[in-house]
Amino acid sequence: MQVPAHVAIIMDGNGRWAKSKGLPRTAGHVKGAANIYDMLHVADAMGIKYMTVYAFSTENWKRSQDEVMALMNLFRQYFKKSFEESKKNNVRIRVIGDKTALPDDLRDLIDEMEEFSKDFTGMQVQIALNYGSRDELRRAVTKIASEVKEGKLNPEDITEELISSHLDTAGIPDPDLLIRTSGEQRLSNYLLWQLAYTEFYYTDTHWPAFDKAELEKAIEWYNTRDRRYGNAKE
Ligand code: FPP
Image (tube, rainbow, N blue to C red):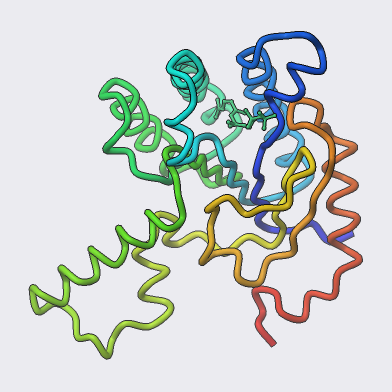
C-alpha cells in the first residue's frame, strides 16, 4: 500500500463528541488535543512524512472567550511538552498562520519550539494556528508587492513557484490527502492554494474518536484513487 507523503487534517467535531458524552465542549478539545498527539505517533510509524493539522482558524476568535482561552491553554501545554517529544522522535514542528495576533507568551513559545526542532529530519509537523488561507495569500501578496516596490523583483518573475515560496508552507510539498472528520464537507479556508491537486476524504467520525483504524481506512481509500493529477502533475 502506498502511504501519502503529506496528510492534511481538518480536525472537526470536538464539540459534538463532547456533547454526545454529556461533557462540556472544552472536554472535547482536551480529548482532541490528546488525539493529535496519538495520531502523530501513528502517522510517523506508518511512514507519513508531513502532517498539517488545523488547530485554530482566523474565524475561531469568534467563539466564547472561555473556549478561546481553553484552546490557547491547550496550545501552551502541548507546545511545552513538544520539546522533549520532538527531540525523542526527531520531529520538526512549525506553526503556520498569523502569529502576530497570538498572546506574546504563546508566540515566544512557538518561536522557541520552531528553533529547537528546526534541524530534526524525521516527520515534519505543521500546526495551523490563527490560520486562514485567504489571510495567508493576502500576506504573501503583500510581501511580493513590497519586493516589487523595492526593486528586488519584477512583476514578470511572479511564477506559481514564487507565490508558493511566499506562503507559510514554503518548502513543504503540497498535501496528497486531506481528511476532514465529523461529516462536514467544507474546506473552511484551509490551504486553498496547496490543496489544488489533493484527494479529499471525509468521515462522520468526530476528531476525538478518529483512531489508527480510521487513518488506515483513509489511506486504503487513497490507494483506490487514480493519482494522475497528483504532485507528479502528468
Ligand atoms: C473542531 O471542533 C476543532 C477545533 C476548534 C480545533 C482543533 C483543536 C484541538 C484538537 C485542540 C488543541 C490542539 C493542539 C495543537 C494542542 P469543534 O469545536 O469545531 O467541534 P464542533 O463542530 O462539533 O462544535
